[in-house]
Image (cartoon, rainbow, N blue to C red; front, side, top):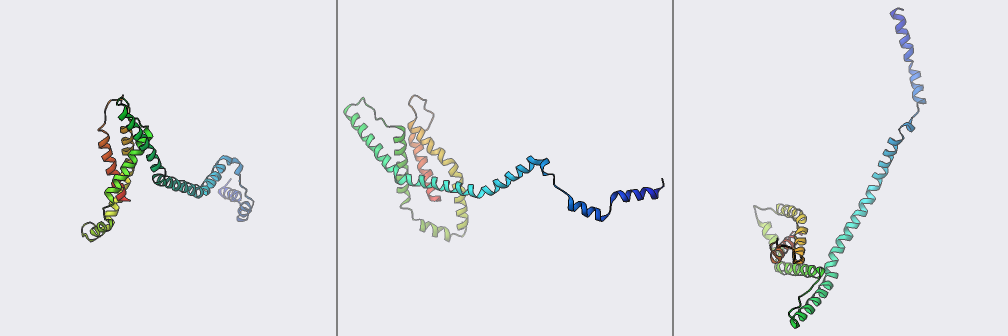
Length: 206
């Protein structure tokens, strides 16, 4: 067989342009062979479409949590502090009558009293502070620009927010720690001062 016949057979096997067009018109899709792959892709599409709704629900849940924490300070916390003060007065009177009795408060009452004490002291320290005067003092500075100061406050707020809850929890645990455990802390007063300073800095940042 010469080279001409071999080339003719190869060209006949390749087909014509019309054959290629017919094949493209009649070509099918074998999706059933990759059922799992396409099912996963469909689930990804559904998950992507659900993201906005889930984000809105999460944001609404976060707003409700923030509102609950904010309103607790002005509604339930004063009432709980009133009940704790009542228990404290009754315990003090019973101790005054009988010196062997001890002032007994529950853990929740001690924590509520500490929360209210921290808030009252912080507000008393920050009320005389004139924020408008501080604003104009910073604005008139040539070295520290206002936007730099706000960026510093924003960074400080992010750093303190992750450490602040530990400060408050340490204060509550130090105040309510059982007497049987060994003393491995600085004392309630120092923890209380640290908590007051933290809340003051946090209120200034906000």
